[in-house]
Image 1 (cartoon, rainbow, N blue to C red):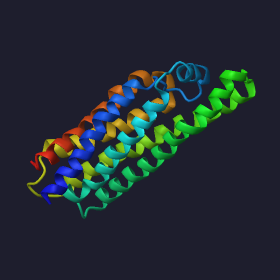
Image 2 (image 1 turned 90 degrees about the vertical axis):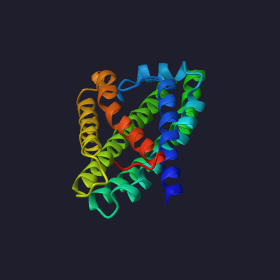
Image 3 (image 1 turned 30 degrees about the horizontal axis):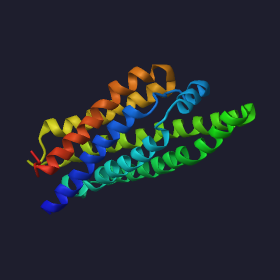
Image 4 (image 1 turned 45 degrees about the vertical axis):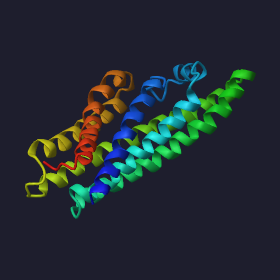
Length: 218
């Protein structure tokens, strides 16, 4: 059991750190309907391929760890099971999104750069728009998972979970979800809203990882 705690905690922690690094390296793109800015970011990025490979690996570690952590914190609760499934759904979406960004976008993008084709650019722009919007849905699934974990822990009337830890998951997940909704209503403000609202649930997942590494439930 102790090895399980540490294995899952390590997966979340390492994945989270690598995901943070990959996000910093990634071009700052928030508007799926601003193809010009997106293509400029793609064409001027020297790390596009490596960054997305890095992000794919990091996302897998982070989300698979979060999905597995329900067995140690609030197993048996329906809300926790749904939360775990949402992390798996988010992971599946990210695998599709990042794989497409490693294959479809570079192939079409190189053709656009070499031949300056306006039609091909529209295809690239359409694919990018779909992938970025799908990315918002994938993030929303993750933050709903955090919220449901908090709900499950909060409804477990035992001494195993501190009130602060439970409430943090609940409210941080809710804040993250609201942030995604607000961003989808007005994409330009995503540059401010996403860091402010997605930061808290992400930090909570790292707190969870540290607790598991230390085998703490208080």
